[in-house]
Length: 594
Image 1: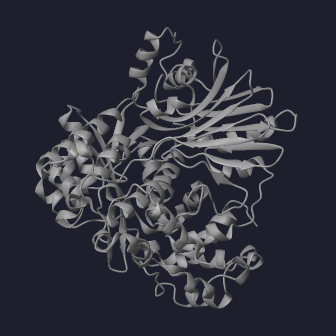
Image 2 (image 1 turned 90 degrees about the vertical axis):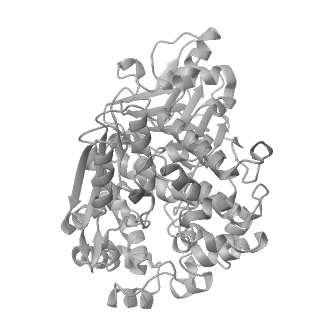
Image 3 (image 1 turned 135 degrees about the vertical axis):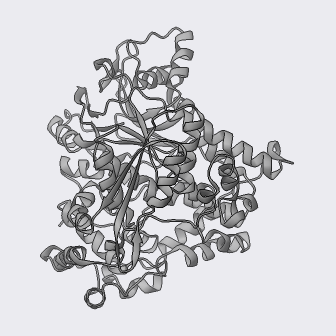
């Protein structure tokens, strides 16, 4: 897990090495264990290293395969790198390190861009062909690892975070009205390739981009699972599905133990993280380090679930660490969490993950997390409602159920120059759901959530907050083979038992029933949800700042109403409307976007 950056020139000039160095410096937290810079012809690469696999200097990046005349930078982890290394050795390749980075370079030499189909894991990488000047950018199937791009006719820059591109300079920071529409409609989800800034885009998940020396490029989407029932699963009983899911999850968890340093677990006490702990214990892991976080009660809302995480820790005899965060720490850490955001994120647990990651990083460098299970296995309360309509009615039902507000409501919120003429967020959902490969209404909704919303909300949140402290988070529920299996699973098995039915049945084989049958929990941060004390003061400061006045994104009357009653205005999904508006403004100000 690391941070990468680079520049490609198309105008015959040498790359701006100082700009790459600025990007690399901004990524220092992602890779505190080492740095490197490489330049050749029209390309420069930068890298910050977090040592997880091959702790020696042989694993340093940028890494050059002299024989193959390729150089690359890589962020992530390839869990099957040992198997691939042995396969490549059998083909005559020689290795100078035990790193997964070198495996990627030689896999590219052997299979070209098709190498990504053989990589099991999370990754973003850039590979430069010395002789041709061609550059290949790639991102993993579920978009677990980020890759941001900023281009002009003269050059293209890329980095592991959006703020790194800002540090390089010369970025169009004007706001994209379509992205802003998605942000306010879709609970801060802005779908790739867009970001809220016009001048920065994201390489979509499961995509390889080949950039030629003249600046032309082509994209190839290399993975797209089918959300349909498959012949090979015909006749499988619910028990057989349970066992298949459990075995696939066991494999996913085992893969994510590949490391040359200790691996811990973020343990909320919910089904998903508890299953990870149980499977690791079942695999013979002893003295497993687990970590939980809680917050002080605010507005009568309890802020921790330690009862459940303690139960799991006792059951499997983990070395458990419990962190209780006082409310004043939430407000004090808010700016730090916002600074770590590559894009504005409104979910309350973003500060929780930032605070938790700070503490966990003092103990381990790698953790497994239960992120993604609810989207992959239909665990949220709204999925039954999404499943009950005809397939052709799903886009309308999805928007009505999940969106924070309707398009018509935005006319009362945004200034006219920032409001698209049509419902661009609704149209995005319609187009995505109209694509073939989703059999039922629920299949269409889960495909959208897993491959778009999940990528650009919870997954991005976990990556940003953990990497701000040099902590690598691995997500077994987003193992691509497990996702493929879940996509093919009959909807009724996922919806049963109040959601995640097939996963709960798997849990009953390993976990105390109190964990499996508990009410679904969320990651509450009451101080933000109820706009308490210093958090509200910070919100007022941002909304009344000269930058906010000059920017003029929102209707003055709307902002005044929110500030007058900060805890009363809720979106259709129950989120605090003031927080959603203010977080965007705080993020823009924090990153110097005026």
